[in-house]
Length: 137
Image (cartoon, rainbow, N blue to C red; front, side, top):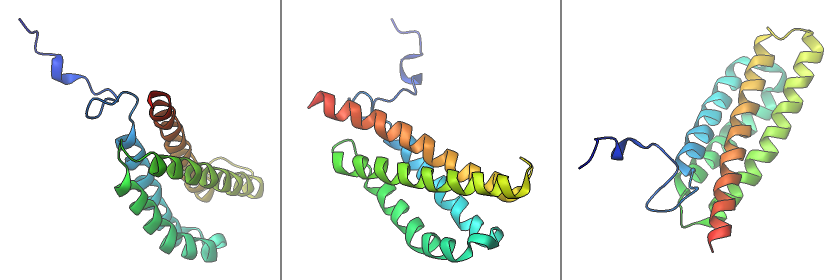
């Protein structure tokens, strides 16, 4: 007899693979990419940086998100490295924006901080998935 809750577990299992959070990583990479495209229009101080990252970075994040698979360890490793580097970069930019404005309500600070947090969450779940993939091999 079943209670009807067997299929409601939204946990990390993907095709029988424990600790797979690739779907979450994919969503945060795409979210960060969308935020970068918005930043191109709003953050004029880093416009040249955003033009390069906005064009090539978002394309790269989208390709990495599409390559996400529980069978491709290298894609998850690459996602973790890229997420770590982008988090460090955007957190630095957010701190710089805060030091210039001296307020947490500055729209540029909030935008940069949101991008940094998206990459931090992607890094966390990429690393957690990578740990699960490596420990099971």
